[in-house]
Image (cartoon, rainbow, N blue to C red; front, side, top):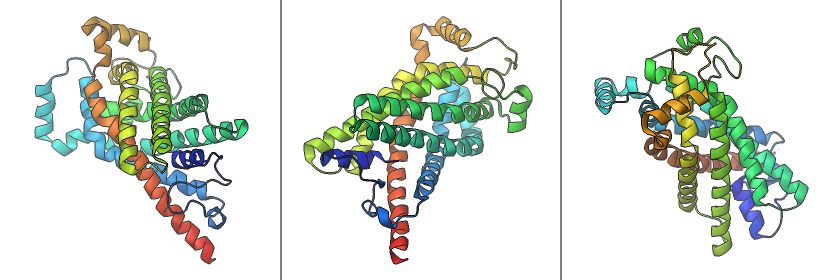
Length: 315
């Protein structure tokens, strides 16, 4: 497993990452003193960073969900917000935050493991490797995101608790129940992650090649924000379809109303631009969320591995 920071530094030296590779931070280069299971600590950091960023941005997720539902009204949304700002804007935050933690971990592990394996196999990095790494991250994201986003959407729109959602779905498989909306969620996450990881990695690589040193955090945030904005725009149509499917309580487990039905419904409401319903809210959420996530993940991981390395050296 390697990280984007490690990969970029390895490119500057025209070598592959050393074995075993180290995450960004002061612990890099001190692999001899790290415990054998340090990857588990790294996965834990990804989960913690994901939970923090979800809590910070959850009110914007609530706004995004409401914008993508039929008959959205700013008057109604603002009225509910004023009436109960915390209770309304943070509906579903617990289930979604708990879901985001393994989701972010699987996303990062999918990216790390895939890019490292293919880089070791070919001896160098390439655009194709980045794309495959992003696709692997997208699969990991969708598997966890689909049921936890269903819980979040139902809580935000209808005030449902977990048991209420289970009663109205009741089936744990791909096309029914808790995985309603999985197909558009998978297409969304494949599109988003492939574009985001390629854009961020290419941007960081370009900066470090031009300047000859590690890309600073504020530049990484800017690069991630731009890559996230492009990815978000491309993935919004599938996100809008997914939200419509998950918000439709009247669609029971045996309903035949799927992605095509709701995509046509959006087109009938406002033409092709209706598919980008909620884009503004998503642009406020995802570029900053993921940029903040990666900064937190890299910083927290570096501090943690530095401590583990120091303990190993003393031992």
